[in-house]
Length: 172
Image 1: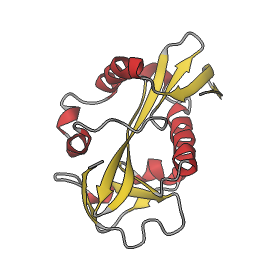
Image 2 (image 1 turned 180 degrees about the horizontal axis):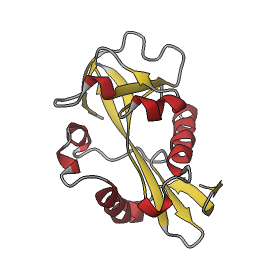
Image 3 (image 1 turned 45 degrees about the horizontal axis):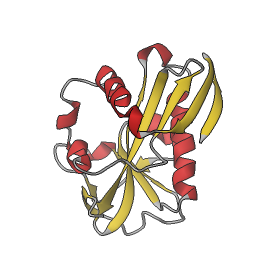
Image 4 (image 1 turned 180 degrees about the vertical axis):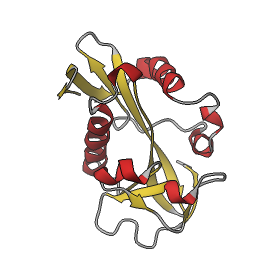
């Protein structure tokens, strides 16, 4: 499904990531993140697990050029299913246009519509607070993740209440 967004740089379409987008999205992540990004603890949770179809999205300009991307992965927190948001990346030439925020808002709304109860990520509180994310206590990402950067958003009332423990790879 395509949804047009009016960014400061013109019309951008948000759409579900397709299998053919994979390498282009990976190249964007390589461009936007430090070398060795796949050594981060969150990548161990993603190994061998496909991103969640329909929630992982790309943003393309009117020429079809990839401007931004976001992915979601299913994980378990203790025994509770959750979505792990990330990475989200915006091409350096398109930063400051609000594309990251558009992708987050759109995909979080879709996650809620499809029945997911909770979303988590590893990120900066000042940025993600605007989308409703808060620091999670008792939720442990694999080391060496800074626990102050483990954030969550409840998509259903009290969805994080009582949810704690190790974040583990999806077994589905």
